[in-house]
Image 1 (cartoon, rainbow, N blue to C red):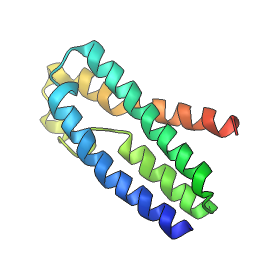
Image 2 (cartoon, rainbow, N blue to C red):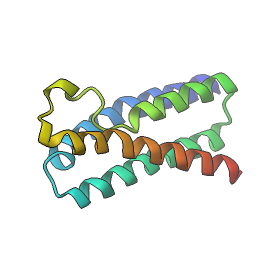
Image 3 (cartoon, helix red, strand yellow):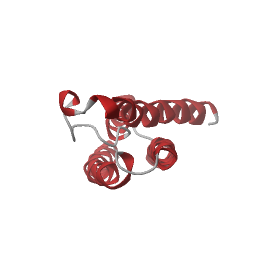
Image 4 (tube, rainbow, N blue to C red):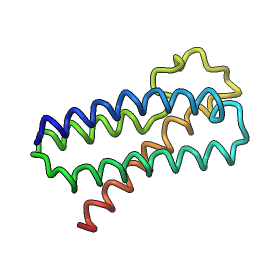
Length: 118
């Protein structure tokens, strides 16, 4: 059962990375700030909720769970690896930091809350 779980997590990581980059290019860097904040919060929560559902459904072992939370944390940052930090103009640094930090913290918060609601 763990191999199925890990396979789904890897597939989710690959698909999530492509969706995250698409969101970053289309809305997060160039759209209204409020929209970027909303998308980032929903993105982090959706990754955490999806992972929680997968864990509850397939009940993987501890090593698979640790791998999955790492993959979820990586996927929760929609722009991860899309742009090099050094290439972001100074006027866009704040938004770039928001896009990296907000969805990750929402992912962690929702994951912790979901763990306590079991």
